[in-house]
Amino acid sequence: MSRQNFYLLEKQREEIDKEFGEPLEWEELPQRKRKESRVVLRKDITNPIDEADWQNQHKWIVSKIEKFYEKFNAVFLPRLQEPIG
Image (cartoon, rainbow, N blue to C red; front, side, top):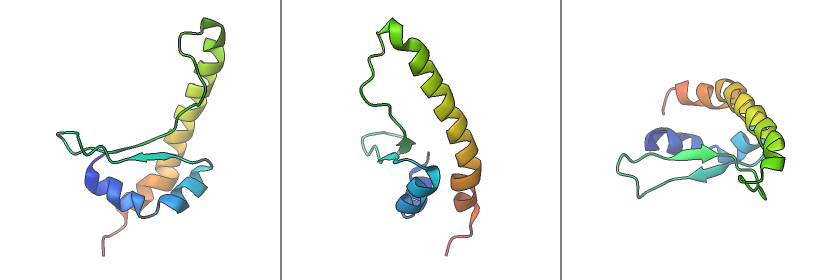
């Protein structure tokens, strides 16, 4: 996301994490040329080359993509549409 949107949302980080229902990682990425930042959710203790666990990993990914889509519209987007000031 743009750095401007990132800073706007980061001011409400604690509330957003609470509404999202789990802690998110807020990464400013100052080394990026396009000055982008991101908000991510990671799965700990996962081995992506463990084929026996792929089904569980894929279920987790799908559930989190669906959650991000739902929460983006309910939690992030309204905050980005609020008038500044």
